[in-house]
Length: 100
Figure 1: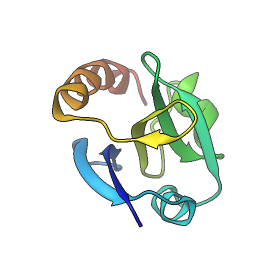
Figure 2 (figure 1 turned 180 degrees about the vertical axis):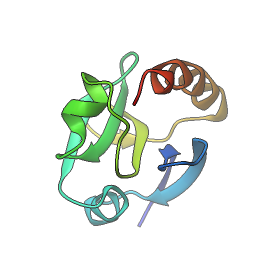
Figure 3 (figure 1 turned 45 degrees about the vertical axis):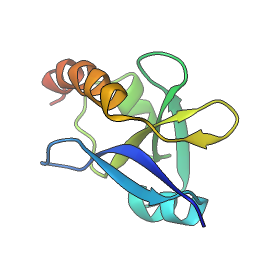
C-alpha cells in the first residue's frame, strides 16, 4: 500500500505534514466518517473531511469538530510537498481566525 503526504488539521492542534496510507478506509478513520471532498484555496488542492463537516469547512465560519486533511487531487490523490504545505498553512491560518 502506498502512502501520501498531507497537511493534517486536528482540533486544537497546529496543522502538520504527515504521511498516511493512500486508501479510503484510512481516510474515513481520520475524518471520523464517510468522506466529503471540497475544493480548497486553488486547484488541485482539496479538503478531505467528513460529510458532516464539508459544508461548514467550505462556506460557514464554524470550527470543525473532527480532523480533516488537505491533499492534491485531480483524479487521484497525490502528496503535497513542504513548500506547498507552507503556502496552504498561511492561507489556512487566515481562514481559521474566522472560525468560531
